Amino acid sequence: MSKKISLKQFLMRTGKFERMKDCEKAIRSGNASIGSKIITNPNFFFNPDRHLVKIGDEKLRKAPKLYFLINKPAGYLSQKSEGEKTIYGLIGKLDIPNEHKKSLFAVGRLDKDTEGLLILTNDGMLSDLLANPENKISKKYYAMLEKPADKNKIKTLEKGIEIEVEYKKYKTKPCKIKIVKEKEAYITVSEGKKRQIRKMFEAIGNKIVYLKRVSIAGLQLGKLEAGEIKPITREEIIEKINF
Image (cartoon, rainbow, N blue to C red; front, side, top):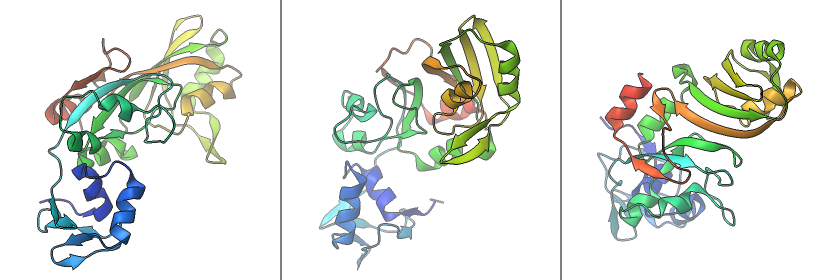
């Protein structure tokens, strides 16, 4: 049975709209209908398997489920933005219909300065599973530090340390850190607060000068070059994540 989703979510997954604000504008202006009823609320929830959706006279269907891995380069945003480089510019080189490209979104985010592994999909149910903190999906990062790693301070980070998140104090959950060279380490966390790893090292008087996510649970970045995208199946993701 299909899960209920909002009208704006459905329309974004058809690839009809590139930007959410354009999608919401079309709905509020009375251009969207479900069955025979005009819907002007972008957050109206419905079952897409049971109802026909139209924009004007055009019948719309969700794009087929798609799954990709991308190595996000530094300097690119993970979310759509005007006037800045984003991963959605890189999606343009995929050999799939334009509507399918526009239906894709990143699961989770990496900050602008961070490289590494992201999952691209238009599968909302899978995205919810991956983003659910109760699933405690591990994410591993490679970091280069400004100063040599202090083993005692690293232990403090592993136990959890207080950082600021959305202007509030937050204690990070326990993590694993492996020092591989004087100024290099691998950090494995099971949460993903904004700029969390950078803030953690700043809290112990150090600074990250380079950060790359190398894995999400069993999904590995491997030899994927910066900016490169490769297809993957839902089954491979489920197997590697091991829900």
